[in-house]
Image (cartoon, rainbow, N blue to C red; front, side, top):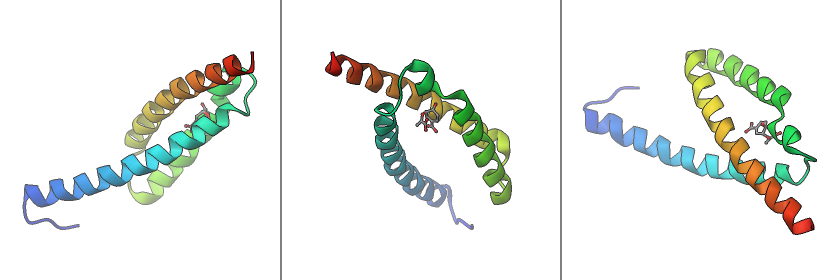
Amino acid sequence: MSFSSIEDVRNRIDQIDSELVKMIAQCSQCVKAAAAFKSDHSAVRAPDRVKQVIDKVSKQATEAGLPTGIIEKVCRTMIDAFIDYELTQHDQLRQEKC
Ligand SMILES: C=C(O[C@@H]1C=C(C(=O)O)C=C[C@H]1O)C(=O)O
């Protein structure tokens, strides 16, 4: 990638951010759907699945030339936020069933 100014760089970052927002919104819809298939909070947290995801994206990051520390931080932050969201969704679904 080559840029001729900081504005150029920031414009590209803004475009990528906006793509990320759309993808994260799609992911949140999947997380919401996942809540319906889980029996309790421990199933929502799914630590084994979290480990699988982190391992997989770390491998992909290495292949893409991205330091694994960066992807691990980003992914863990995103998953933590999704778990909070999924717990809320899960509680809501349980309440609706009562
Ligand atoms: C969406 C799920 O639930 C949670 C969210 C995950 C994610 O954002 O990747 C992974 C595991 C769970 O903590 C799932 O179990 O797949």
